[in-house]
Image (cartoon, rainbow, N blue to C red):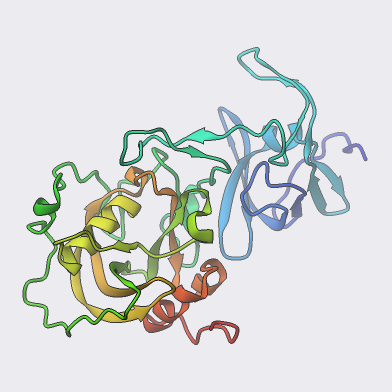
Length: 317
């Protein structure tokens, strides 16, 4: 179906993505909640029921956007077109099949090897950054605000470079009275933090290439030999979220599939999510009420419940 002459996106119209070429939520349907004209062209903001993303209308049009009534449909096939710089883009499919190009993570792994993201995440619209009811998503080396909730967003440049150094990292709560830690036979020790903003949203990571089948999870990891639980938690938070935190309190010990994980509550005092390490392909700030929609592994649900996300879904084991 061809578009009527002069047809363009309008607020309130629905838009359906028939593939995941332009959004990692695809195939998905959302509502156009905003339009904006810039020097680079027309941009639309789409709400996917709790999270928002901004798209260039040129990209959507080149992907074959057709309107049917009040529903825009973005096809998987992209017709050939010329960019403003004169580069010609051949016709192709946006379905992640042959022709899909992996994206190199700006951070190398622990061995110095390049890490490739097979299905890169998409940053959310700038309108989500300060909206306590929206999911804000950041990608490596992407855009960030100068601050969130009055706390500056800036790189933690003097972070510890050695395991011993992490034991003296700012943020360890030496006055915290926490219970003894017990590891069950056959499991290893891990630790992590819940970083909650004053607006009620919680920081979480998108593991690179859905490592361990996790789509989104909280920052945590195996305790390095000789490292304390608190030091390890702060280190994992920096490596996976790019954030500098101070531990506030003990949250609980959680029995997971291969480990027992001690979780702490913490507050953000520095860092920037776009400095996430190679283990994360995106970092999100999620309203507590939406956590169960994003945490796909049931082992994270008791943690979400403990911080006030509401009762865990009945299918959580």
